[in-house]
Picture 1: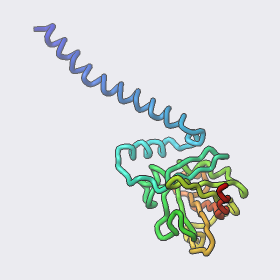
Picture 2 (picture 1 turned 90 degrees about the horizontal axis):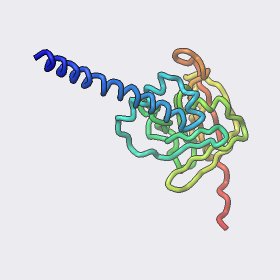
Picture 3 (picture 1 turned 120 degrees about the vertical axis):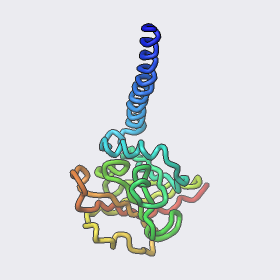
Picture 4 (picture 1 turned 180 degrees about the vertical axis):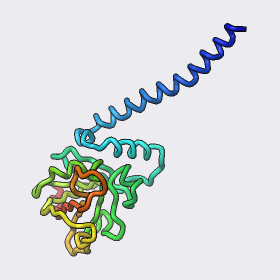
Amino acid sequence: MGSMLIGAGTLLLLLYLVPTVTGTVLSRLAISQFRAQSASNSLWDSARIRAYQHTLGLSFHPAEAILRVHRLGLEVPILDGDDDITLNRGAGHIPGTARLGESGNIGVTGHRDGFFRPLKDIVPGDTIEIVRHGQTDRYLVRQIKIVFPSDTSVLNKTTDSTLTLVTCYPFYFVGAAPQRYIVQASLLPTPPTP
């Protein structure tokens, strides 16, 4: 009888420990793999990594496009919308701005302590790529500025093809950042196909 109780206790202990230890190991492995995906991910805030992991169990519409800045090692899916859950999973297309592939001012936003952290090192003259449906649009960064959240003029309609990236600023501010970091870029002409 005593050995049956010890066996049952051991079995219950194993039933608890195996999933707990496995879950912890797999969680640490996922974080390690996540950080290894890109040099820019190593800049992420630990809370933002947890928020990203939480979104892995949620379903989203397919990405509208991929935003890349090769020099910064930045590559992020652009999803429709700018709510917090969307921005934990990727960058978000700002509602009310031009759609991807259209002329006008396309607004894209992302978290400063997540996907958009590398933007702290972007400079005028850098190239931003938007890849959608096998086509790549290239934008040349023309200006970077800091504005207050109430200044939405950076998202005004334009007649030329503009890409406006928006994130909070300062990048390493603790708490809700008081300003917005704006990157504006102009569409480069598509080179003729030979």
